[in-house]
Image (cartoon, rainbow, N blue to C red; front, side):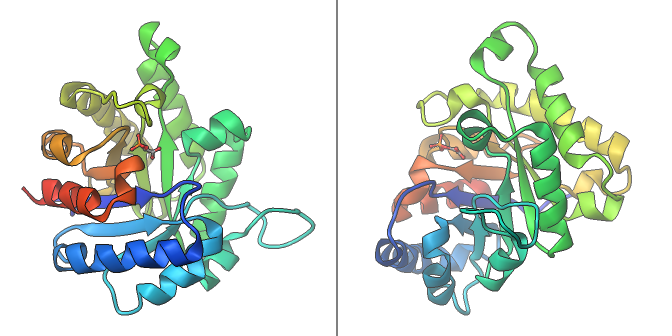
Length: 253
Ligand code: PGA
């Protein structure tokens, strides 16, 4: 089954609202014409969501948040809920990015709750999974990634699985300049696809599995040529309109 490629930029803790607007203006000028052949989204920090949504009015480029809380409202100081993200104009939200898991204590259980809350609000979750270097070196990659995928997706209906995206991001490749080889990525993506078939047979072939971890214009086309690599989750290179556009072009070739 042909899956439309999806390239999502994760801006992490970068850009004020004004800086974010400027970056999106540049990106629209460069990438808007490509956005009917590839799904494109950007994930600015919470404080820039409204500003970026305004800048994206009438655009095919979608808006994503980087995180959410699983309750829709309440006494949870510092948190932001799925309905609030919808209100800000988001279509997507990252769930369980490795930096959330590593630095902010997001557990498999929390990622599952976030994924469910996102779906309940009508958002498309981008569920992030990936092994650390010691896990890879001890031969546990597929076990770790398998556990993360099963936990995040447990209890979801096939229709719900069909409206999410999985992002495989080896932790050792994030922000390090090291990428998985296309063969390493394909191996893990195929294993994730096999789990999706078990969990949601009818939709598994339509779910997109993105690769993330030091994706750049010069390695995107090779990574994205793999049969189960359906796009990219891009950190550093998404902060430069030209580089991000180069990666989107790599998804088309
Ligand atoms: P990177 O980040 O492209 O800077 O490695 C990827 C990510 O964390 O999503």
